[in-house]
Length: 167
Image 1 (spheres, rainbow, N blue to C red):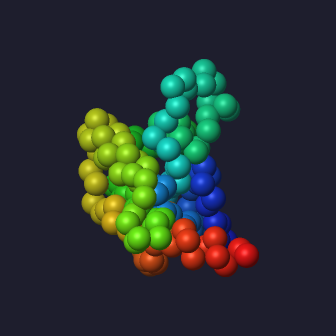
Image 2 (image 1 turned 90 degrees about the horizontal axis):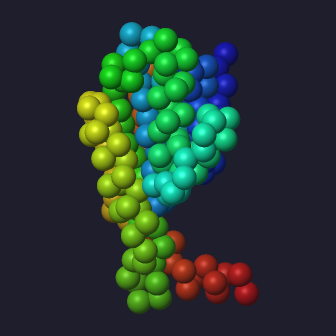
Image 3 (image 1 turned 180 degrees about the vertical axis):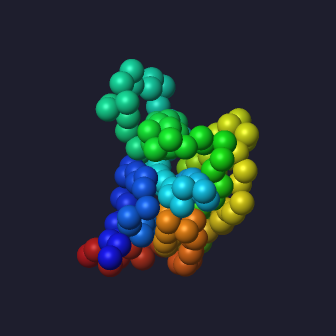
């Protein structure tokens, strides 16, 4: 029986033994699926990157897109797979917080989307699915054994309402 795993921001998974779920707002998830091997990987990153990438793979931080991407490609190679053979899906990058006058604030999601699209474009990979941008959150479920992904959307969180609920 296969297990289920929930990815928090910065978490990564590669294999075929677990159904993977995550919740995205402005964060982005990238999935790589290898049809012949029937396995894949997923990352959930918060920000595009930091200035200095660590020298050793053991120090990579999945919260940053550039480092999560390095990890995903390394995992593919460790499993004897070529990233060029992967099918890619991209999710997230929404504006997920509203201000009291209902305007959406911050464009971290947009930065994450542009970054993820640039990564896969520069790598020459084939994006076969995407659910990016917009408002609110996304609950994503990815089956790395079949490459199937499901998305359920939610509304943006009103900052003022959240503050009032804490009182």
